[in-house]
Length: 207
View 1 (cartoon, rainbow, N blue to C red):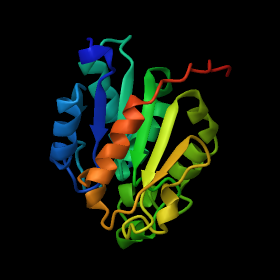
View 2 (view 1 turned 45 degrees about the vertical axis):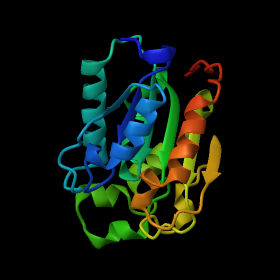
View 3 (view 1 turned 60 degrees about the horizontal axis):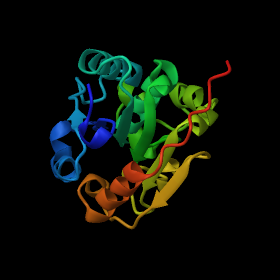
View 4 (view 1 turned 120 degrees about the vertical axis):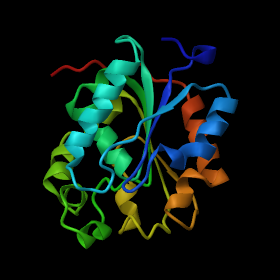
């Protein structure tokens, strides 16, 4: 399956309590600029299942939608950033994802995940078992184009610098609300620039 203009397909992964509809503005802009854009509704989306199970849904969707040799770009928003990380780091996605961009993702957890005790919330708490597991080999992202887009004003990702990562590129923008990170022109422009960036030569996995 080939995307337009020889670009890789872009897959947008939503956050908790969201559906792919949250990406309507972002998807329209990317489509207008020539990307083939895909998304998937993760279910259930309310935190009642662990994030590794949602990541398996993403893996299944990719396997069913794209040819095995098709390289991909993944954009993960909020919880979707952690779901995407699990797919890339634990379900083989590192071998076919060329660009991975997170938007306001709780890479080190968030205090708002303490509001409920459901499995998905537990996975996003500070120093959760899942996040410790993913962060122990975060250097894997040096193999691909990785960017974290975040805002210091985020009151859903607390502390907001939890969206930062020790590898890859960081883009900090001044957007006031968490949900605006997928609709604000600054965010979308930043995403477009990262999707246009030259793809680095992937470093082989020597494990």
